[in-house]
Image (tube, rainbow, N blue to C red; front, top):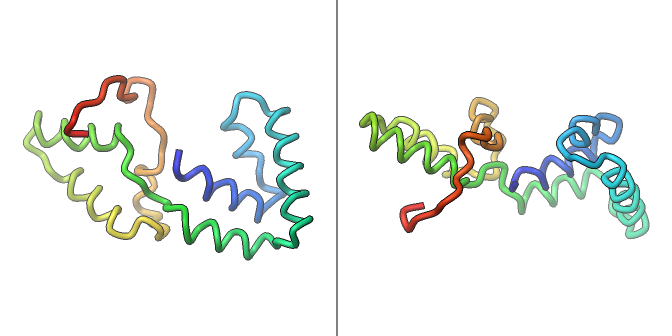
Length: 123
């Protein structure tokens, strides 16, 4: 997921608050080993947390069109003649690198029933 890179960097910046990130993955022990190695590598190259955070945020969008989000917008427009979600998605994606606290729902992963299992040209 695109936001995970930004999230990882934020967790690194706030190292004592990275419990939420660990909870997202199934094997916390493997993550912990990887995370320690990553921190050591950043320190070895003299990369400080604030600079890395800024760099990561500048090249990793907070918002990226996800297939299920597009599918939701298409379904709402097609099934209910409601284009509001499409317009919201377009507005969010006009500034994909900006934090948009009121639009956090566009950063969430799909629910099990929202996973798109088959793609078509329109998506």
